[in-house]
Length: 173
Image 1 (cartoon, rainbow, N blue to C red):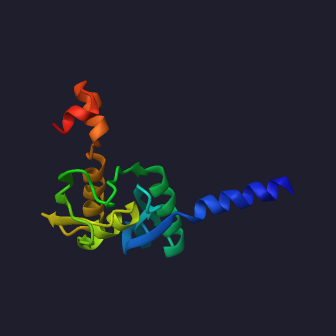
Image 2 (tube, rainbow, N blue to C red):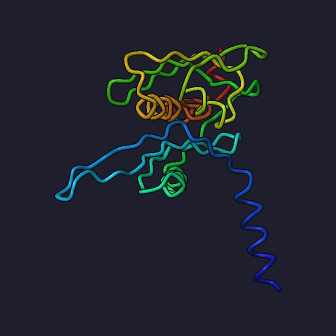
């Protein structure tokens, strides 16, 4: 009976993670016998409390590809430091491949102003007020990875103070 409880807790812990499929694409590989079809799924996973990850899965069926994408996304989860207004601390830029993303903090009540895969990443990270722009590429995988790159580059005030070797109060003066 104790094992069942532990399993129940694990399922509860898992249930607060949300997953959204950004893209499902049918891909083919030419082999000796002809074309072999498979599916590639891009999945964003997050808990809306500052943790988010992007994963890619390939399988011969869609459900298997999504399952593999979720597992890959859980391996690549990052922590995002948010302000009290559920925004980011400062301007952030991220790149991945040909995609570039610029993110700016926004005032409370602004909402998530972003498009495509970047919007999905920001919503699942728990960001509620932000301005974001995709530049360069419209590839959903590269844009999602560029958004993750921009969120990774964020630093909190306490981290900056620690790196500079100054008390936190001296940053505001």
